[in-house]
Length: 105
Image 1 (cartoon, rainbow, N blue to C red):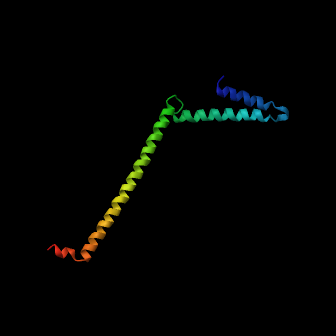
Image 2: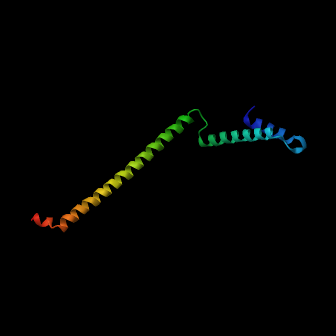
Image 3: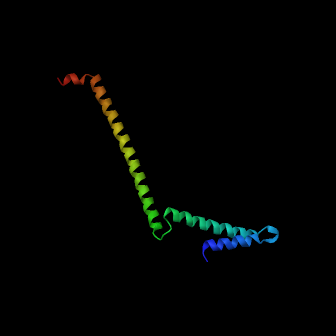
């Protein structure tokens, strides 16, 4: 019996409850079966229903972690270069202000 058939039987069983009100355990079983079936369908649509899916997700997580590390390093390098450039301009400005270019002639 597959999951869809099991869900159909649970729903049919829930419909035959006393005074039209099924018990909590039966409703819980219906909800659990429906959620499991929905999760499997969603994973199948994403292409993650096979045995290699776990490895694929692990690879994607590693790739995403490496991307984040590279992005962080790039921002740090850009900020470092910007600070160095500003300090160099400050030193050149001070040298011009003190008349050091005149000493070079």
